[in-house]
Length: 219
Image (tube, rainbow, N blue to C red; front, side):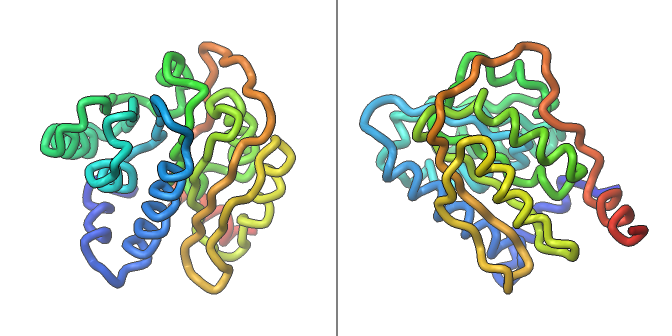
């Protein structure tokens, strides 16, 4: 079973695949902030971990005071690290919630959002659940809003399927990492109209990357 607190240590190894992935996600978050219209901005981050992808960008970004954000993370150790980062950088519009990020009710008062960070999820849920989770994103994302996601490109590569599922739900591709790197990072812009949030729904079921890899080996 993965220890999601120690898992973050790879971020501190500059040449690790995880560190490269983090830099790619941060670049896309910065771009989304740069491109966002003037005025208040709303951001939600699912399975936020220690919040490095979003918080390290917000700390230095000129739009930081425009942002109201909520990071939801189940592991209390990671949530505590994220909360300490928020306090250290005086990100007064950012809230860290320790809870199950798959429960849509956590986001009810902040959606549809300008930016939805859904990183670290698709590699830990089944293919059917990836499609289901993408199906919920129109409830979370405003028209013109950006969704960021990650999924490793281990064989079989799910990224082409993910791109198709986003396309089916009214999202246009902004950028996806090339297939010759080990990590998968993508950004999509929502071009349709947001759907009403349905209270009480579960967006996905987190089973863990070890379970997913074992299932792939058994195919």
